[in-house]
Length: 370
Ligand SMILES: Cc1ncc(COP(=O)(O)O)c(C=O)c1O
Image (cartoon, rainbow, N blue to C red; front, side):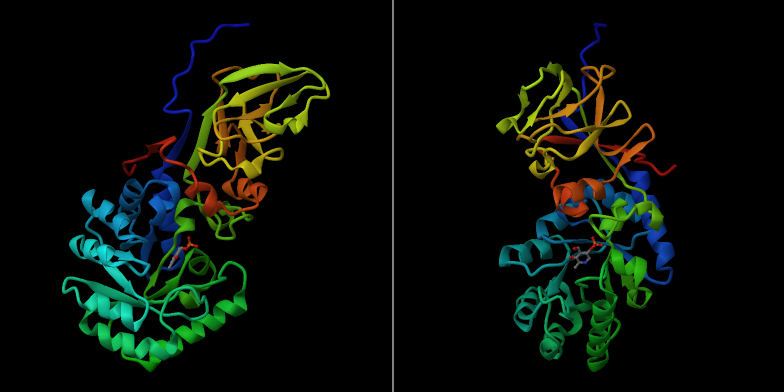
């Protein structure tokens, strides 16, 4: 066998994030909602893409503000020197409200009681979230007037969130009606009005209001989660998840592979062991069905994904040190996050958000605008 220098990669498994794709997607979304502002949703470390670099790229491409879920996520952006407005979506505990005040974050009131906790801190501004049918967060219509009154001058925005903008036109239309009825029943002054997540930004123009609030589409993924091609919406996936072939062997007929020996060779089978497992965020549900790209071709997973590794069936061309693409493109082939999600019985959101940054190094391409 030809001898190779042993490869040196950033980590066992690594993620490459194309900030050019983030900028492209922000511009594409702005074209879909040309008269609205754009709030880039960068919660959960920008859906696993890295909140600071993604926020910088999104703002650079024309996003007006950012949204997170915890005060700590907002504080991280402030500490990195980001000065754009940052909205925190959820109800915060007292320590979170204190951190939000110190970090100049805008918080969300979800009830008259949470509005009272907010106005007790003189430095805080708030958006009021209205429940229009999702029934998770937000103030119900009958309490909206009271919460609005408590917030007084501190109110700078009012919003709602759709339950099924990716799948149910009728339910979304009903939520828009409820939202607009509450908006016209009270005086919200010049508060910023917003509702549209990615699906609504793409497919429900009547929900665009003053500002759209996309998350998943910023990353070039499809709002349907486990299907649909982002390219059809003019979106470009930003993340590629890579690893490498760390070991090759030939498994003899009758022998099995990985825990439980759930896959057995029928003939001498060349296999590649790849150092990615569910501790990296490569889900165990991908066992025995998914594939990865190695040498520009789809290669099937043999047996179970384990915590730290999994095994693929390969041919004689594949060598130790070859690059493996778990999500993304290689040669002419592409494995979309939507396809990987479908194989794992989940959605693209969970695939990228589940990548473990303590195991998976991230690097960035196209950091500067070209
Ligand atoms: C309140 C709120 N707005 C907007 C978004 C962005 O949603 P999407 O990623 O589907 O665009 C989310 C994410 O779940 C959210 O919780």
